[in-house]
Image 1: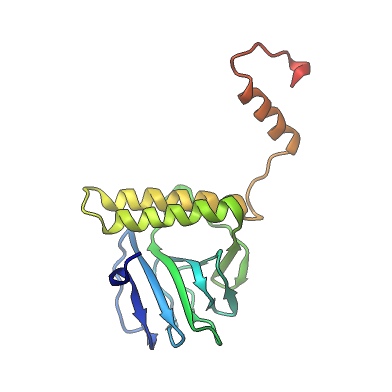
Image 2 (image 1 turned 180 degrees about the vertical axis):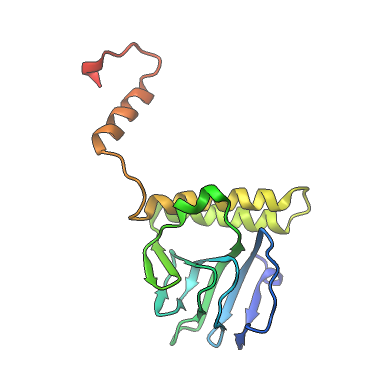
Length: 195
């Protein structure tokens, strides 16, 4: 990513005095230096997703390392920034209003009131990062319906996150094996005992 697209925040920011619009989505790529921090005593009226790319940050008492993703719920205190002792915190972020059918995907472990966290590894990490870069590209792009494209990419990221959440609905492993077998053999006649 080109340096001109990065935001370098060096000071602590207090944002309680700003009135935020309820846009469907606002996104960014941020590199916060050691003094970067945000405090909002009443939070905001939307959700905030932050995915740590490099460095180390914090959201409340939760420490965020590369591959960690955090959701801040609307209406809760927000205290986040570069972690103490870290020189930087690089994140992809999105303020958004979830579509109604997304609610069950936002049931992540709660580190503290209003702060939901997941640690992503392997394929999930790669898929979420790619979807969030795609979200950012669409959000700042010139195409018509760019907010819809950005929301679609965010939806993909949230679906991948939902697969890492302990609250996600899990299938009985035997059903998963049977489904894979059936999908791999669609072109062949299959008897029930084979499944």
